[in-house]
Length: 55
Image 1 (cartoon, rainbow, N blue to C red):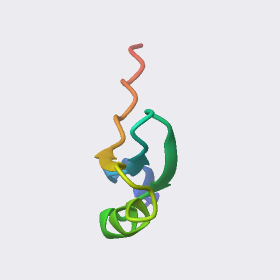
Image 2 (tube, rainbow, N blue to C red):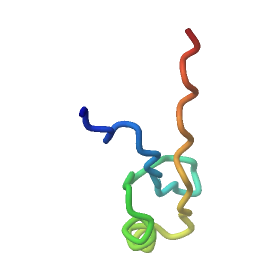
Image 3 (cartoon, rainbow, N blue to C red):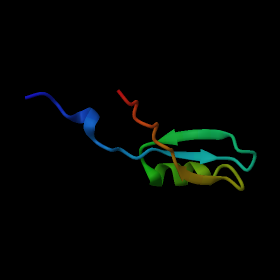
């Protein structure tokens, strides 16, 4: 049976500066929150998943 690793819905988190620049990306929200402490005024947000291509 084939691996279904690519089928999992893994969340991605990014740290965004007040200017709107993404400075860090991670699969771990606690890691992203720790990194955001290094950037005053930054926020952690979930990365939007790309829309599935219709066939």
